[in-house]
Length: 333
Image (cartoon, rainbow, N blue to C red; front, side):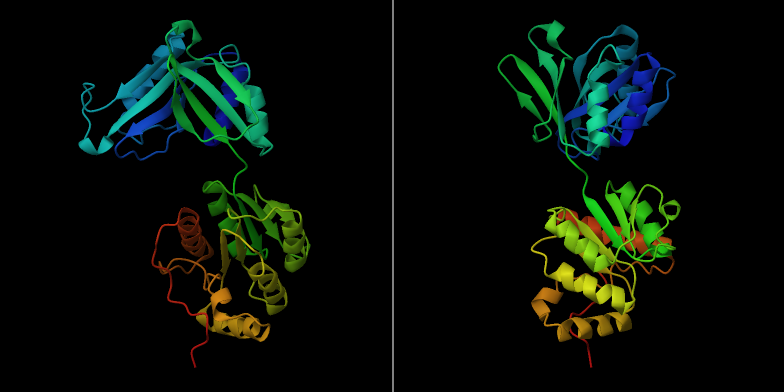
């Protein structure tokens, strides 16, 4: 829902009715995760997806039917449904319902909590022995897994939203701007930190929080406030030692983070490692640092480098093994 929340709110405020499809269960391979949504607005425009092309036309028709009739149903889509799809599409269960201010009056509260980055969970009855109960929503602030829960007389889909992971970029430059865009596309809440107020201009980093402060001081304060955790990505985009070395010194002493990267060439990294070793860091500790940051895709421009770093961040977040640039924590003579 997070990716189409603005579109949902636009329909909600319009007073008109759209159709909403939610992926609640998958069998076999599925290109999109459970909880993915597709909105059909009152004018027929589509936002979001539940099957990445496999069943989109059929889901569209189902959502349109729900919008027209107010009908709510849990529907299965597979190769036996009379659809011309490949075996790789698998089988999915999708809940179809009308969407409007009248059908989901609590949605404004849900959107507000998501915008404020507070935890919020929506329970939706997707099947019940009493058809009049299907489609009822309950909103709470408790955290749950996103999943379909089967009860003796009903199935309830639980859709939980937590605060997005953070990406903190240290150094306000063209690489930071490109990485800001990549981070936001991956669902990160982005902060750009630079002590130079002339460069720390919010207009240069759309959608990011921009902080004018020394990187090591800001990171120390965030860590002390409990705002750095295993989902936080940290990237040093400035190669100036007076900014970078104090920052990496603080970062490498943190008990946890999701990703720590530093941009720069291998020559820059050799000097970086020498400075950090002089500060007392051993090889095991330095192995927590991804540097030069990014997957080796031949990146040169800021946009290309941002793609390579984003890929490495995503691999670190998911635990997927990827071949990164050849790197060493100890300078080669």
